[in-house]
Image (cartoon, rainbow, N blue to C red; front, top):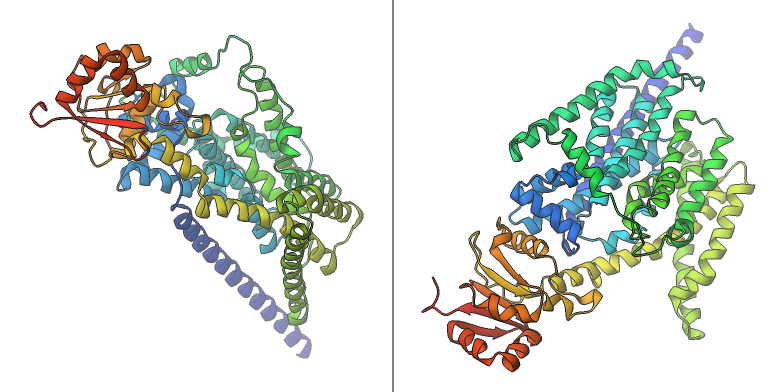
Length: 586
């Protein structure tokens, strides 16, 4: 009976352990979701807005329900963005909340991708992965800018995460979701196609043997999900465009390919992506991503997991070749879809087994706190030292401190076969020492000195300076000039030389649906005299140079304008705003 009691006690203990494990897992899920919500809310504030032509174009397409076949592979981004603009008080608020949603949800999936990648992984892997993601400088340089490449980043992350979750749980509904994501990601941007390389994992069986027949067990479910994605687009295209088969129309695909039919010649020459970006801006995450992948390949890791490393490498190969076709050289945002994968794969070299028992866990906590305290101490020491020698702290980090940290980190990864608490503490110290300044940089340039918000304020200044006096109407007639754009420097350019950009800015600010005939844009100063008198405009915005030009060359026209319009200047005396007098207004 005593033997039976011992066995029974062990069974009860095992059930209690599993029950406690399930409770911890559920708690972790709840905490991660709450963190996602808090992050979403926090990132929605103090960001800028769309400042580039591409973003304004997709906003225009969404607001006006336009069909643009040459941008047919952007429409999931267009529709998703449209949803946020529709439910928010204003399109601008919707844009900012949408950007925050893209970043926060990507971060949530990065956490869980790192967490579930290997069975022995802990919350530490997830937290480090998220920290690496927020160390990327694009977080601040694109704050509030809903680039389609950020949406593509979300979709690629969702596709890879769903794949990993299926590998972990083998739940069939995830295959349906994965199939749908394959199509939806493609309709966000074509660079997401390269994330589909993870599907090669389905060609391997559980013993790691490759055979083409292995994928047959998954093909039906993936195809059903893929058709579901097409069905969703048929519904969306029917509602917003009145063209049910717009997404899958041969004409749409033909226009997309034609859009990339450049005739040759470089506006900017191709460059080495490894030299300019991978081994520069994201050097430490990229190197430990590579070294960790090599290290893990010698351990018991299945081919289904190994294949994930191929996506970032395949994408950089494609965009390198693409520079021969696309004439603009290095464009950082093209690589955004791969950045989350690098972030969650980089910490995978950490093979820390969490100690059991209260004493072991206490030791782990002490090691973590000691590593974090040492990070702070070394930061204070470094700042004091560079001040003493009259040097720049940022240059000290880049030239001295980070190379030493990288050497120590790579040495540990390569030389130490079995990690313990001490080696983990050193790794944590090295990683956090690199990550913390990068996150501080992003925080500074989002909340303290908001760079993108400042660019937004400059670009939209002609509208913002006279916002209270500008009429908001779908029938508005507005007049402005390209001189406003041309007279400013690259980083301080107001408005645009593209009329659709200006219309997009106006529509977004005032939640309107104006079209091309609502705007008269004078491309040259000599075009101003005949065009400015050709119609009765609801408002006119000129540069001070335009004003001086009319005053000098066409005083009679300026006199007529002053008779029919009231005039005011912005605070900088760089712009002139004119609005019809009450006696002349319609």
